[in-house]
Amino acid sequence: MIRYYWHIFVTMSRQDQILFILTLSILLLLLFVIFLAFSTFYLRARNNRKSRKYYRLERVWEPLLLEILSEERAPESIQSHVHPDDVWQFLTYLSRYIARVDGEARQRLIEAGRPYVKRILNKLHSWKVEKRAEVISLLQRMDPDQYDRAFRKGLNDSSFLVNMVAARALARKGHVDNGEAILRHLDRFKIWSVNLLSSLIAQVGNGLGPALRALMIDRDEPDWQRTVAIETLHKLYDFKAGDYAQVICTPEENREVVAAYLRLLRVIGEEKHIPYIKQACERDDPVLLAHGIRILVHLEKEKYPSCLSKAMDHSSIWVVINAAWGLKEAGKLDVLRHYAYSDHPRAELARQVLTEV
Image 1 (cartoon, one colour):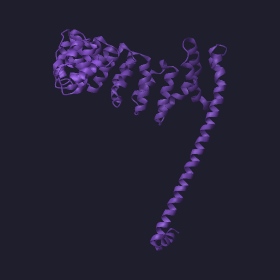
Image 2 (tube, helix red, strand yellow):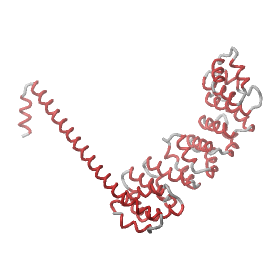
Image 3 (cartoon, one colour):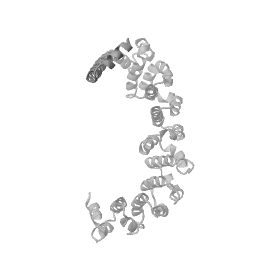
Image 4 (cartoon, one colour):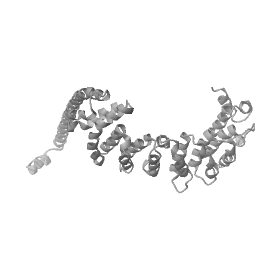
C-alpha cells in the first residue's frame, strides 16, 4: 500500500506535490495543537481534583491537630484519619504547624507525624531528583535533630539540588560537626556564588571558626574554597582571623584570597595589620590597592596615609573612589578637600565624594 501511494505521489506534478506536503503539514500541526489542548485540559482537571481533595483533607486534619496541641487528643490518635496514599500531604500540612510552635506543643506534633516519616525515608533513593530534595526539606521542617545521617548523605548525592537542600538543613542546626561536614564537601558547591555559600555556612555560628581559619591558610586547598572560608569569617566577625595577616598578605598569595582577606580586615583590622596591608597595596593590582587604601586611611594616624598618593594618582577610577570614600569615612575631610580644590586630575571626583551625603 505504501508503494501504491508513493507511486501516486511521484507521478504528481511539482505543484501538486508541494500542495500535498503543505496540506499534510497543516493537518499534522492541527492534530498536535488538539493534542496539546486536551493535555492541558486533562492536567488542569486533575490538578483541580487534587486541590479539592487536599482541601477536604486539611479541613479534617485541622481540628484534630488543634486538639492534639490543646492536649485533648493523643498524638497517635490521628493515625486513623490519615490514609496511606495521603501521607505526603499530611506531613507537608503538619510541618506548617510545627514551624509555628515550640516546646512541648512542637514535640506533640512531631510525635503525631513520626510514624509517617519512616514511610517516606525510602523516597531518598528515588530516581527523581526533586523528590529526593523534597524529602530532605520535609525532614528538616519536621524534626531535624533526628535525621543528620540522611542530611549528610545528601551532601554526596549526585544532584546539585539535593546537595543544596542538605547543606541548608545541616547549617540551620548550628552544630559545628555539621559545618565541618559541609566544608569537607565544598567541591560539590563550586557553582554557588561565594556570597551565597558563605552566608549559608555562617549559619553554623562562631564555633566553626577554627575549621574556617585552618581552611583559610591551607594553600593545598583550592583558592575559591579559601575565599569562601574568609568571606564566612567576615560574616562571623571572627577577630582571631586577623592573626594570619602575615600568612595571607604575601606577594605570592592568590589575588582573590588576598582581596577577600582585605575585606575582612575592613571589619576587624587593627594598627598591627598596617605593614601587611601596605605589602598588599604594593602589588601591581588595582583591586588590592582599592581595598587596602580604604583600610589604611582608617588605621593610620598620619594626615596623609601611606599609599594614598599612589591611589589618588591611579589610572583606575575604582581605586580613586575607594581612596576618596575612605578619607571621608575616616573623617579626614581636610585631606579630601586638599584634593577636591586643587588642580589634581581627580579633583572633580574628590569634590563629588565630598558633597555626597
